[in-house]
Image 1 (tube, rainbow, N blue to C red):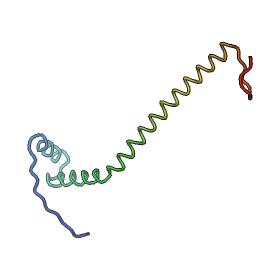
Image 2: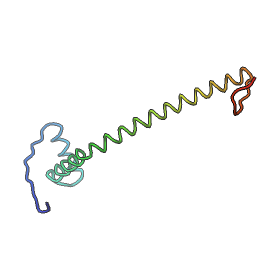
Image 3: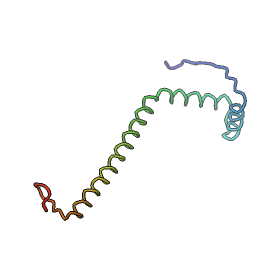
Image 4: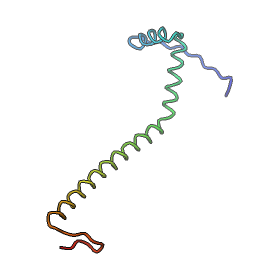
Length: 97
């Protein structure tokens, strides 16, 4: 819907008001422009919640796979140690003494 317009009155107090005042002055923009920027970013962030959840799941899966890889490497070290300790020889059919 191009051409749509929404007007809103926003009252910020305390640390939020202080932050808007300081940042607007620092960036050289008006307070309403800065508040509109924050509102639009918040709307974009709310819209992408599914993306955030998917990325979080991906990070958890990656961490799990890395942990499993570490466990497999430790298990391989143990097997190699046992093979060396007992003088076993690895072959296609299995281990031979």
